[in-house]
Length: 286
Ligand SMILES: NC(=O)C1=CN([C@@H]2O[C@H](COP(=O)(O)OP(=O)(O)OC[C@H]3O[C@@H](n4cnc5c(N)ncnc54)[C@H](OP(=O)(O)O)[C@@H]3O)[C@@H](O)[C@H]2O)C=CC1
Ligand SMILES: Nc1nc(=O)c2c([nH]1)NC[C@@H]1CN(c3ccc(C(=O)N[C@@H](CCC(=O)O)C(=O)O)cc3)C=[N+]21
Ligand SMILES: [Mg+2]
Image (cartoon, rainbow, N blue to C red):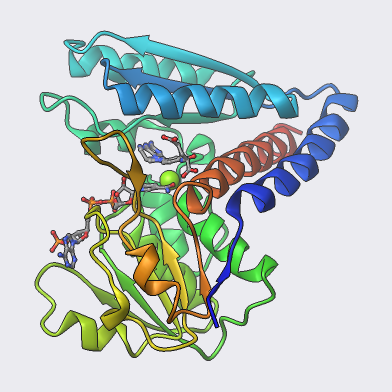
């Protein structure tokens, strides 16, 4: 039996409708959630994402603005931009699009974002609180993946989860979130020996490595849930994941497509984080 395809595009649409209702309720109280996206340089992929985020905001009633800075912007100017946004009462979420040009230290920028406006969940305070199990802003991609799995009615507690990739933006927070949900979690990376055999232990396999179609049927236990985070643009313009969809669909029980899987869920969670941040900031101001 071929895998059931987890339709992230459809789930994200349903979530955006919920968010639109939440935004309408906040607007009745006179609160308009606001998101600022900071984009440095002219990377075409980054532009595409930023446009998609702005469009999603518009559709649910979130105010959004894009601060587009030239590629040679000094780090100090970027930090000053972030600090100004930190101070603004009408901006509740700040996202600095990654990657940044090489002359800017991403850590300096991430650390500069006010933790309660850090809708990416990348600030060390949010990272730490996620690890401790306290309230925090959870990174959009891992949060979107968990939401997808839950909406499909799939159990996480007690399952064996394997995460391939240990980046600060996907792999590590994914592992923390799954641990918080009572999965037994293994994190793999480029130095992991016998990766196919380790991956084959997984009931839930999350792949975030950035290598087109790297994970094939040898990595997958029959019936497993396979989540493909990868976004790889091939020379011919096609967009493919890190999972070899054609091969894995015959082995997995559930599988996410690329495009139309994790990507749209990431954006939906950005909207949710922004609304929750606005709500929390309004409450803190009482
Ligand atoms: N859909 C979405 O919303 C999002 C998609 N993405 C996509 O997800 C992918 C991963 O992104 P990101 O986490 O930022 O990537 P990074 O490049 O930051 O990290 C990649 C990770 O994968 C590991 N890795 C690389 N090659 C292998 C391999 N052959 N075997 C095992 N592990 C390997 C690396 O190991 P090591 O640490 O040892 O180097 C590293 O931990 C990319 O395609 C990106 O475009 C990213 C964010 C959001
Ligand atoms: N500060 C920061 N936060 C991020 O969350 C962040 C970032 N920087 N830098 C880049 C990555 C990547 N990312 C994606 C979001 C949506 C899609 C998405 O919607 N993809 C569509 C397809 C889009 C297309 O056609 O190119 C899909 O998968 O269906 C993809 C990738 C967020 N990231
Ligand atoms: Mg993210």
